Amino acid sequence: MRPGSDVIDRLERGFNKSKVSYVNLYSDLDFLIIPASSALLPERRNVHQDLIEDLGHTSLLVSEKLIEQVSGHLIAAERGGRLAEVRRLPKRA
Image (cartoon, rainbow, N blue to C red; front, top):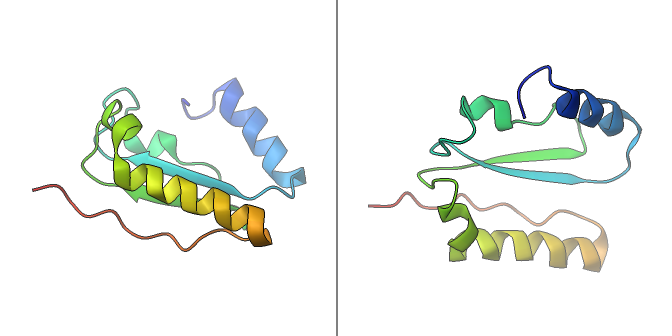
């Protein structure tokens, strides 16, 4: 996900042609993706990005609230082809 990488370049080209809606959930504490801004997808009307605060790389896999959010997007897309309303995840104490 390095800026200017082949992966990002291919995604960029695909976004321009795609009718798919993308949801990008990224973390500010994912120390495997540095800087966090490199997890951002290109700004497009079919790309929705949401910062997940205070969760590390592996914590994202087991976060109940994140799983609920992903499930909500999938259910909403299946029902009406629209993205679910994204709720900000609360900060951990």
